[in-house]
Length: 247
Image (cartoon, rainbow, N blue to C red; front, side, top):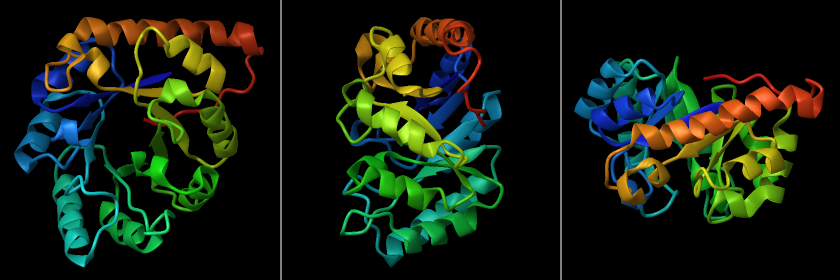
């Protein structure tokens, strides 16, 4: 069971690591849903953290359609990330019709080389989530989709997330459940959907405020729940049905 935590500064990443996080999503502009952080911040976090860091590639919060100039900026940002110790990037692009923008995606992936790729919650605005999943499964660099199942929060989307987990079997893509993740509903979400990875942001911060610092103890609360579910899983499933996970 993997736990990913949003960081906006080095201190967040180190606190998340102390709390037992497996991976960092590094962003700026958390109130805007996450924007591309500065290269200095990327270098600092990637150097200081000992767990994988994935960097948001999103030049603005005006939507998920990008023109040629914006794509050029995103490509340059990916090249800059590639020169750091970051393990991967987080990106997404849609057409006006609500389908995956394959042309934009291919341009961006062409710059990614050795980087792992998460397709972010642009996915939740796609017109058909299973169609979007099938499209993304055609790109070997994409190993995760961050999604709340098309709903405002993941706990509201248990049936949708369950269908996505089932549809992703054998594709090489993990469904990373995010939005509204906290200790109160985490076990029910995992048990109801079969997800093996979750993503948390505000719930692990002081006062649950997106602009406050990460609290290691709140990360640990989620880590402990996931560990308990992992230990209980063989008893529930007879050891079947689990999928391998890639960091």
